[in-house]
Image (tube, rainbow, N blue to C red; front, side, top):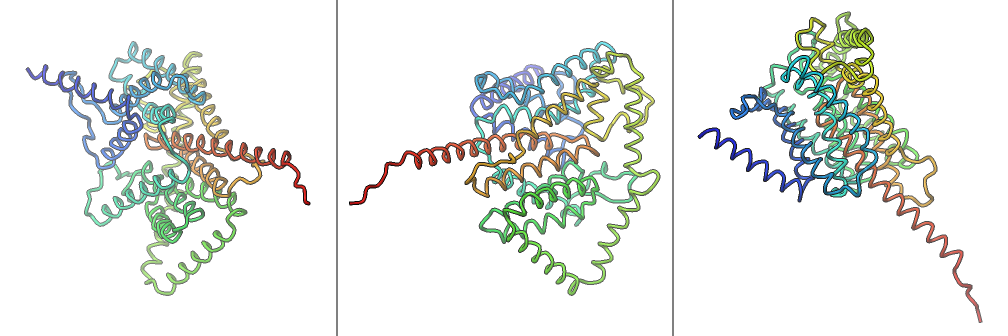
Length: 453
């Protein structure tokens, strides 16, 4: 009886999900990514959802990429005439997934093989699904910045609640290698940092700049207090790119932003208690000391990178080319840093070989080419559109820098997909601008002469 009930529930849920994916695929994709992120953030069903009918625990991230994979197939049927060529590298990755999984099942068993492919799937599937659903999106740089700012403020509120002990902090955030206490993992902290960049961009192009400026101040302070050094570097890289590229078109706003920031810091130095300066100095000192230790987390990661690459090069030609079978880490005596590689590039190389690493770089190259603002912009293009394209460049740069010390998760994959969608929208705007300018010049050349009597 229980078997029939569970089977009926699964069938009803699957049918409802298919109908929603056919009519509102963007809702299904965003809901799947958001629910997965919230449940992981709050550690809800951390060990998975028990499915008695299958005798397994379904992990939340596994359920997410399965939903996104099904939605992607629905979208292929629905938008097959407008399939984006930029998504072709994903199919090469899917082939590598299938090869790795099939080899892993025959070598190590189904359970170990599933864990071996889960990492990259949770990163790639949100981006692929969002790219396929682009015809249903109306997303430009400004709207993406609004979404990021809202998400960053929500995560900042979670961090504040945990600092105030009003919300429990997961035990997994306590690490013996670290001296710093974290309230958010790096995958959520980088969203706060990117929201900081987005708020500054909205201040540059928005009319209600005072609100965006206040939001930028809050997000900047929270980014510093989260004490994720990789997030600091990625945020600084994106912010520096935004400042250098937009200073010419927003000189007055940047100067005003600098003056306001300087005045605020001066006021804080005068009015703030000495304890505040001591706390700020302590945060900086602890992080510098932790980074310089012989057994620092970065040294531990680099050791894992070197061991993983050496292990790959010592394998057979097939493993070097397409990676070892999924689940190879099952029962291995290698360093933990080799099994859980904190680098998206090295992780892909170690698990999917030279082919997978090349395909990943190809995808990033295509995304970079799509996002980058042309050096010769059409005459008359609004400064707002230029700033929007530069904001997408800064956001992409922060993502690519962040993926050096971390392998990323569903939120990072989703942001990469949203960057591509917003860049495609900007391409349409730029193309429309070019057509309008050409039409205007054509009208001027063919305007009939005015005869004065």
